[in-house]
Image 1 (cartoon, rainbow, N blue to C red):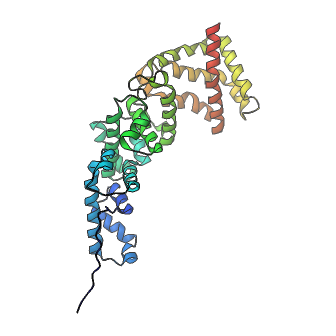
Image 2: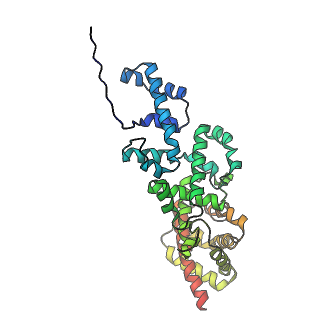
Image 3: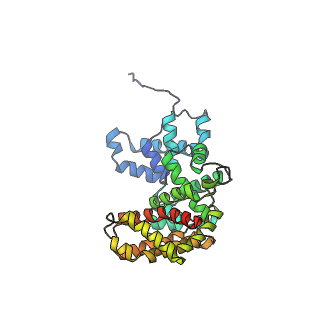
Length: 338
């Protein structure tokens, strides 16, 4: 009696995306096998439980060996041990550095140190994300921070160059690094409604306009540190609420631009002085580190909450903010020439 056995031999490293996701999510081999069984894979493939166990363990061993290369992604591209197509390499890197929004909201703005890492048990319990996954994500944030913190040039470009991330993910990491460097407070109860995307949007604008690199492209750490001279200059904005003529000029410019375009125009016009004073006072205090850290808390208290109390639609918050900030330059130029 004879039997036939088909054998295929190759040197391409096979990557099962579903198993990779389970590994990244921090599941043990046993838990991963149980989840794969529940997905119906045995019925779909006709495999036995023993084969599934062996297959899962084999993939996990491969991922563990690849992990040291994923800590420095360019090494993955140039190594010769694992034959992985470029598209698969990109997938491995992108997913390894992906993060859960629930997790990043818990650590955003905190120092990426051992002290914060000790809190990961509590964060894991609160978010439902496995402790192993929390540690991977935290270590990724810290690793990126350490690599780029002393580099000159664009923060996003440096992250892309050294970690080979997509543009969107690199921008998210730039926001995480920027917030960790400046220690902005994001955990207060009144800020919990804000998503990571909200903070990342603010970080991108601040990097473009508030940092040393926004003034001088040759400065060290150009996208990491706020420009102290710029923050000092913001104190001069106090004249916009202290000088009646300039306050009236600024109000006139804003109201002229928004008349007929804002559903709550009357409320805005009547409350303009209070809103302006709130924003100017926030800006004028930013020479102190504590006030820099509390920037978002202060903006919510001094600008967002007053608008909410008057039942302003979200889009009209933005319209006033844009027009208000746009006229500041004109007022300052007028002050200079006077």
